[in-house]
Image (cartoon, rainbow, N blue to C red; front, top):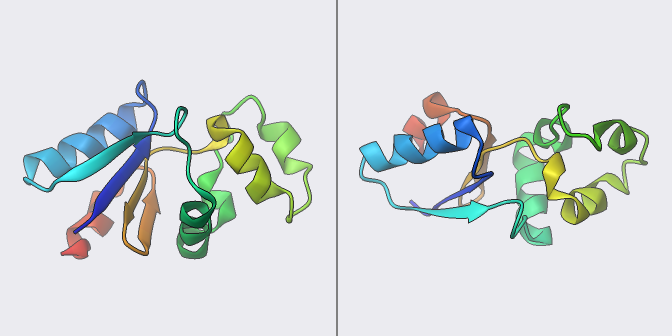
Amino acid sequence: MNIQIFGKNKCFDTRKAERYFKERGIKFQAVDILDKGLSKGELNSVIATVGLDALVSEKADEYHLFKCLTPEAKPEKLLECPRLYKTPVVRNGRQATVGYKPDVWKKWD
């Protein structure tokens, strides 16, 4: 497994995801999404797996402006403004989840 956890330092679900993998002895790479964000390729891979709407936090200050964008402009806005991401975004190769999803992670053997 090649686990990457993209999250925010103060996000409770991000910490729970990290603890989930630590408790099972599964190595992972933790990435501060506010600092590093997702690359364009990573973003496209996650969108292909979970869909664009699942990635966006309705709690973000910029959410109302994001809703008004055209579908073509939304991925670019996510790349520019990582505060819009719902976290954690957990990747295992081409597989991905958004939020705390231990039931899905169990199947990633």
